[in-house]
Structure formats: C-alpha cells, structure tokens
Length: 209
Length: 208
Ligand SMILES: [Zn+2]
Ligand SMILES: [Zn+2]
Figure (cartoon, rainbow over the protein chains, first blue to last red):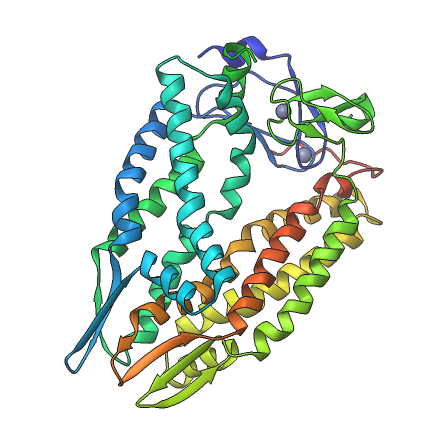
C-alpha cells in the first residue's frame, strides 16, 4: 500500500471550499484536513478493504431477518399481533399510501442493501484482484447512497414507538429488532471503513475502460 | 491568500474528487467519466426552489393528522404537535423532547439554515464562510432525522391491530411530511458550498 507515499507532491483540492493543497505523506490511520475550512480532504484508512469486506458480509447476513422478522409485538386481553419492517411497508401500501410505502422501502431496506452489496462486490473484487470496468460505473454513483440510508433514524423510530405502545398494551421486542440494530451498526461502520480515495486510485490503475 | 482549484484553471470531480483541468461548461472526469461543472449550475436557484417547496409542505404536514387511533369504535386523529402533547401529559418528557426536536425543530432549522446559506453566498468575510461551511455540514447531517415520526407511524400502524379494541392508521399528514423531508434534502444537495468561498478573502488557519 504505497500509493500515498508515491503520490506525495500530488495536488488535492478541498471539495467544500475549493482550496488547493499538496498531498502530504500520510500513514495508515492519518487524515488530511483543509487548512482553509477545516474539512476532511482525504483519510488513509487502516486495512480498509479487509474491514469493509468483513462488515458487508456481517451486514448481509443480518439483513434478511432485520427486514422480515417481527420488530415488535403487542398483546392485549387475548389479542396478539406483531409486525416486521416488511409488514409495515405492506400496510402502508394496502392503505393507499404508495409514495410513503416507496419512500420507507427505499430509505430503510433497498438503499442500505444496495449499499452493502455494492461495497461487498467492490471490496471482494479488489481482494481477489479482479477489478472490472463495471466497478467504476458503480462506484461513481455509490456516494449518493450514503445520505439516503436512514437505518439509524428507523432504530430511533422503533424506540419511540415502544414508548408510545408501552402504555396501551403488553409489549414484546422481536428478533427483527436485534437484527436491525446489527444491520444499522454494520452499515454505519462500512461508511467509516471504506476508503474512497484508495479505491479510486486502485480503479484508476487497474481498470481499462 | 490560498490558491483555489478555480483560480488555477482546475476543477474537482464531485464523484471521485480527482482534479481535472476545466474552466467553464460541462466536463468529463478523466478518472470516473462522470460529467460535471466547475460549480453546480444554477445552484442558488435550485436551492431556493426546493427550500420554498419544503416550507409549503411544512404547513399541511403540521395541520393534518399524522396518526388515526381507533379505540372501541371511537376514532381520534392527532397531528404531530398533538402527539407530542400526549407524551407530555403522560409524563414521558425525554421522548417528547426527542420527537419535538426531530419533527418540528429540525425541519425549521434546516429551512432557516438553507436561507442563511443562500444569503451567505452574497456577503461576508472569510471567517464567516468557515462558520457557514459548518452550518452546511449540519444541515446535511440533520436531513434524515426528521423522518423519525414517519417511521414511528409506519410501524405503529402495522403492529397495533388488536381486534375491535384498538387499531392505528396513518393520517394524510404523513405524505406532506415525507415530501417536506425529501425536499429539504434535495435543497441541501443542490447547494454548492464552494460558492460560500468564491470571491472572498481566505484566512488560512494553521491550528489543525
Ligand atoms: Zn476547505
Ligand atoms: Zn471523477
């Protein structure tokens, strides 16, 4: 991983304020901050490929139970009902809230899953040293996914729902919620471990379009 | 005064952050082949348009019921603020504060923040640009949190089906609320934070 030592002397620009800076020699775990606005220009992350690969595998394993297993259940004098994230989306769909059903589906299930499987495919191909031109095309739109994944907000939503329900019924927490918290954790950590700068450098050198 | 990519005839690719030689018009990144401009075209106009759209949605989002509870045949519709008032009467203050911040304060703060940013493009000194850049980070970060109440209603409507005793349905306000959140996110994405720094004196700071 000598990419950055070779490239010192290379010029970088801050995406937030446009100031130019010479890339200093960075070691693993260090980051470069803009001297004008203080934004992070780049970070050289430790074992980025291996860590991201492990997290995406873990995330994809818990994804199915997180979406299809019941998140919470309520019971009250003989009645009992429980619902998963998937049930919630179907319920909105049945009631005619198509737009909201689509939005909830995208923000809590589709986008996080595309993000995880994309990061898995990307790091797996780099680990196996088999980069394909399609990776370039995919990674170009990858950064849009991050701001639209709302797993963390959904987790807080489940907690708030519990507070609302605890008053009217007997509440039980399903395995789906545990799986969902793990999924959220993996998804957030992938954002932390994935080294965009390294991957772009790698793709630039190894993929001919 | 620090040199910028623009003053050196360069432009940073928004997708992969590679510096490309570029001045005006549309360019194609030599690394990722994405098309881009040196500055987002019509950034201010788009930001203003999406912000106004979000502000318009804010009104029905708060006037219309977001949740309809049916208990023993009696229906009770409640707006976001009424839902928060219920938490307060039940003495659940921490949850009341979280929901109030996420669904009322955050959307208004985002809209106000975007207005300050758009105005900041016109005036101000270098130091203020730095604070405004931080404000932009904050607006971007806050974005998704206002979806909180939408997710709460979604889940509650699916889980509370206790025969004739109690059932919960989503209210029409939820559509306007979601649109408002999406519009503020589009507004933040349309804004180009580099406009805050263009044509302004830059004070380099060395304490990082
Ligand atoms: Zn900067
Ligand atoms: Zn590019």
